[in-house]
Length: 384
Image 1 (cartoon, rainbow, N blue to C red):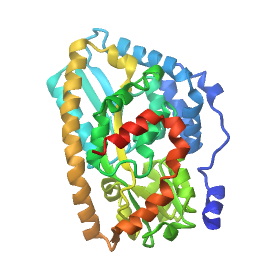
Image 2: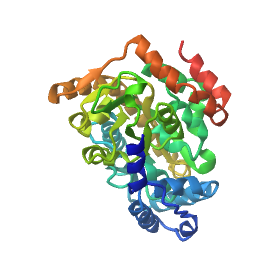
Image 3: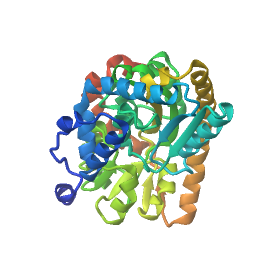
């Protein structure tokens, strides 16, 4: 892994050592919040990650203040529509991108003149690493970050990162619809973040420029992953270095040789042209890529009751459609990727899959204390 480690040491995305908490005290308004986060963005993804981790209990008070500011200024009877800014990082053609647009169209149709939804795709406003801080500061009202982005708010959400915990999308749904799965939507209320719904993308595929049939094939490579201690540890176990990067940066990172490979769902792979950059894709299906639709809790509770109830109804219908679309699109985007580029798709045999499982699953024990035994037991029980 020497070559991979050298790239990590020389890369611009290394931990900067910046501790932005002091500067954070100067943030008081939505406009200054955006300026502050853009300054952090210039320092790299890890600086924004450090910001999120450093906030601790402070973020709950900021979320309440930001939400109250938004509610007071938008729902105060001025006659102007309530503006809901919905930020996400993927293309409009992906299930999440389509879902955000459907939510906009149906919310505005059901509440004409009362609600205006502004959708910001492809990290036009914020990356997933930035958006929860922005939400706490009242600069965005809705988002749908991937599950990995919530670890600084509640370690329980790491249940979705455990390798081979979920063996299918249906298994994920059974857990999400269980009592504990529904409770997870409220786990971040002390920090001022309200979970509203779970949206699907799909099971993760790994890719590189050589076939990855068994764990030894990946040794020495550098993978882009989402920021996750679990992902880092699982790949460390097979001698793979990891580099957390915002999703928008993945194609350039592969193209320039900053990373050798990555893991993602088929819809994200196809929408960003990753199938034209890596030559081999292994359908490991070792973990599930999903999103939680979230809002600033104070903003949401401050909406007029009829508006909030209508928006919840719209979101429920859209969620059903997004999750059905995600399952269909996983197959169609896989087929399109195979047809458009000279790629090889590896489907591991049961024996090969056992090799990956045996290499990865020891991390369960490492993170059991953070996630909670009750949550892990509920996820296992949802298999049947």
